[in-house]
Picture 1 (cartoon, rainbow, N blue to C red):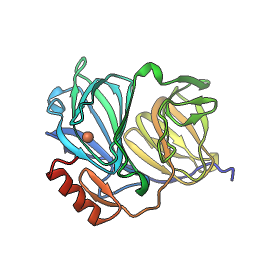
Picture 2: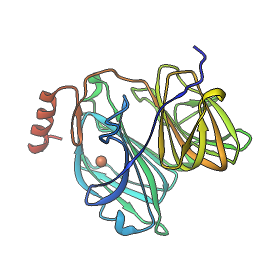
Picture 3: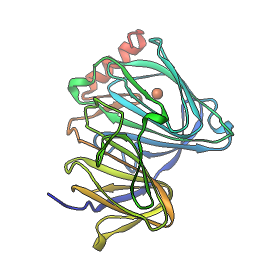
Length: 281
Ligand code: FE
């Protein structure tokens, strides 16, 4: 199969509030788009008003999936009940495999006021839902930044882009996570594993995506779900664009979901709640 991916669907996120009142935009994990296997949630938080985010996300549990925090601006301090802690800075990523469970807090810290970043939830296959928790905290300088075509700058967080391999490793869904910045009119044809589910989220500017004869415009704040195929063709609008290109192998498993617990069955959710209440996470 050597097909250029088309656009399946395009949608905008909705304003939401989570944690202790952090204002954000929820893009995946809404009534409009519950999930896009293996992706369970995508949030964008972007504000230059610290009042929108400094209350943060006090202690809360996770079990059965992974959280991926990627910051464009600002900082995020995290700590968990197992003694892990750290401070993510601008341009860094944290890929946290919650596995059988952690209880942690996440507190955005302002830097020149602006906080801008994303959190993605990635599902774990049944066989790994109860795996040991694992953190990959990756500093900005470890994320390769390459010019892949004239006017195209790529930061490869996970997966492979040409000869460049991102630093996140050992993830079940074999992810591709690339932050692309395109100058006005610049274009790129990105190879992707053909059977992965993939989407683009335009966080700045605009672009057109899809094969020449069927390209569709995607504007700032829009998510575009892509059909299957071995490449995705993108061309920036005249003002250029910033876009996340994210792909992963779909799991095709039943999803039982309750707040911060994502398992395969209701019984496993009840067990997670029991374990959390008994302090076993
Ligand atoms: Fe969390």
